[in-house]
Amino acid sequence: MLSRKEFLRLTGLIAAAAAIRNSAGSSHKRRRGPVVISTWDFGLAANAAAWNILKNNGYALDAVEAGVAVPEGDPLINSVGLGGFPDRDGRVTLDACIMDENFNCGSVACLEHIVHPAAVARRVMEKTPHVMLAGEGALRFALEQGFKNENLLTPEAETAWKEWLKKAEYDPQPNWEINHDTIGMLALDMQKRLAGVCTTSGMAWKMHGRIGDSPIIGAGLYVDGEIGAATCTGLGEEMIRMAASHSVVEAMRSGKSPQAACEAVIKRYYKRRGNKAHGKQVCLLAMDNEGNVGAFSLMPRFVYAITSNGVHEVREAGYLLEK
Image 1: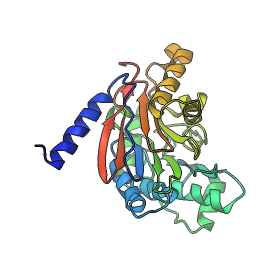
Image 2 (image 1 turned 90 degrees about the vertical axis):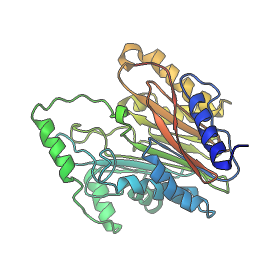
Image 3 (image 1 turned 180 degrees about the vertical axis):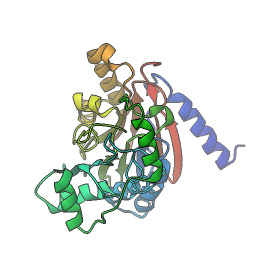
Image 4 (image 1 turned 30 degrees about the vertical axis):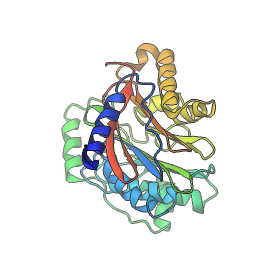
């Protein structure tokens, strides 16, 4: 007879194997209680913070904001918040958006000197008549709201930037091979309220002022409490082109499961972009309003973190292309 610990471990291994390439049945079936998912393996720590709110009957919106604050404040994660790699001018600029189950949303783009852009995005949603603030205006608003002006360029990131300057070659590829990129998070609470957030420092060595999908509602994140939610990670320009997250939610609206919706959007993207899609990793993560989830990417090595019933796991998503 298997112990509970052995059973959970075996179940996790079986589910991870089932999630590998082109598995139409790889959705994680809903367990009783809330659920939170996030992109990449560093999402585990973020999920743990979100779970502390969800397990105590907290609001999904509070959970996702608290969850992503963990990687945003971690100087060792060079693609989100503090410690994020700078643009080619040596300036760290952050993008984020947040959305609840009722189409309320807020966003900041090209925000400097503030560690937690997702929290600022929520203030935009709740304290202004706008959806998005950018650049100097976003910074001014954040400071007025009591956020602290800080230097986001860590010594490690500055060293990496100076090394890049020696050749100054820009290859706009996300760091998907080391699971290091944007964090998107989706949560469903005990009252079946959905919320999501997406936050990033963007592509390293980008042109100053470049904005990817992460602060754009419908591209990096979309939530519809009647249907489900989706977020994405990878090369932001491609997610913008296909309105990735909105496309996934609309596919779920048409009756597809979260898994089938993610797969359909990736396949349609590849069919339309063809050779232009090669080498451009795009990854989708989705959840319906019952807590069933799905994940799929164009190329391999996209992993996501999931927490449900107090169990924290990292799973590998299916993918379309070998490389």
